[in-house]
Length: 200
Image 1 (cartoon, rainbow, N blue to C red):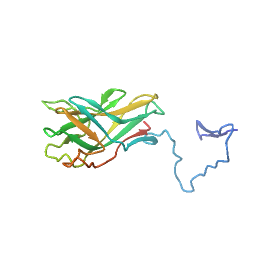
Image 2: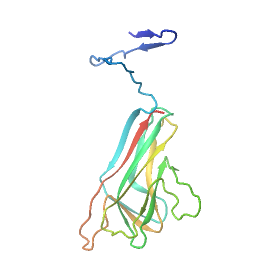
Image 3: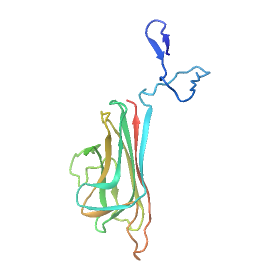
Image 4: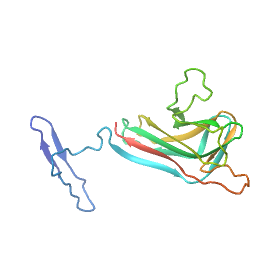
């Protein structure tokens, strides 16, 4: 059974319920003046998923490389939705000669959110975060974070992958630092990638 409310001049709103409900459900109308919100209203949060990474990994690269396990998938409920990607990385870049590197973000294998390439830049490929650790001790914790608001225009599963590119060949340690001089100790960390679907 449904209830239909007709507008004063035109249009109507129809309230309906599923054929079967496990238990009674009540809807309370606000006592003060206000508006009942609609889930799909632009700006509303529709869903949040997160990959909270507690394991450690390392990868050696002289070019763009995916960081193992640093990805998360989401299936937008509408093609007009936007996805706010929040990345927090902790670890260490283990190259004693040059600690310069940048992060990039890929959506289904395609880089998104690149910086402009005006002029000559050795590392002009960052999404919004660059790490420069050439004066940093290899046994200290390093971190960086960035956000990017993406418009995937899809209702199929979308996967976001974090990758990095060093200025020269080096090892990126995620969630841990390089071993100390006694080679018997590591500082363990956590990282995360969070995807927030926002109604468009």
